[in-house]
Image 1 (tube, rainbow, N blue to C red):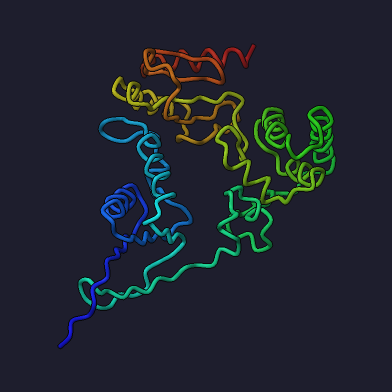
Image 2 (image 1 turned 90 degrees about the vertical axis):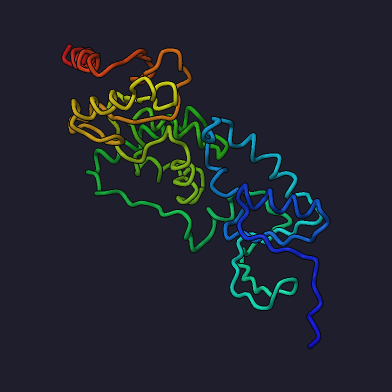
Length: 296
């Protein structure tokens, strides 16, 4: 029986850091490589990380050179947004069926700006929340008046969107749905784009926040010095979990990866004021300080 002709090509499934490195090694050895990735882009989970364990190296410093080399290598054909459907044959002569999902855009011209997603009539990617309840006409009118004043000062220009959101977030302590709708109407932008921008940046909040935002640093230096115990004491004293706001809307409790002051760890920030070398025993005094300010 005649053996099937062997083909010098390789299929790599998954374009994470391991898949990219395997593809580069094979491509540099002279093989034609088909790199299949079910997501829309290369990088995998590592592209979402800040540091890598256990060396604490920068994830993007490790990933970026491989992304650039994979993207430009002539021996690597990238099949993103694709999935392996079936496999048949034997070593050296496998037949693989790959399902390539429709993008509805010209990938050669795509810059990753996201405008097609925000303007898509289906809008599967971004869910626009509705206001929890209709506000009284007087309160709604007051919110619109404040939003108009902010736009008058910052400018009614699409380029000023982030600045407008910053001003609204600062004024109302979160992004009021009525204010966002007013901005969308005045700038001629779809609500999906407004909410897409608002939900991307952690400094914006779509939920009402406390007057004082407490951020507990959970970086490596702070964590090994007891930041977790400080966080647990704050949760116990405030009777809330991380990410929640007290019933009186006075405090919101958050955890962050780094506040950039490792020498002072454990460190927490209340609004823009830093409090270093914290311990569970110091938490009551710190909270009382802000409670006294409010009562005064």
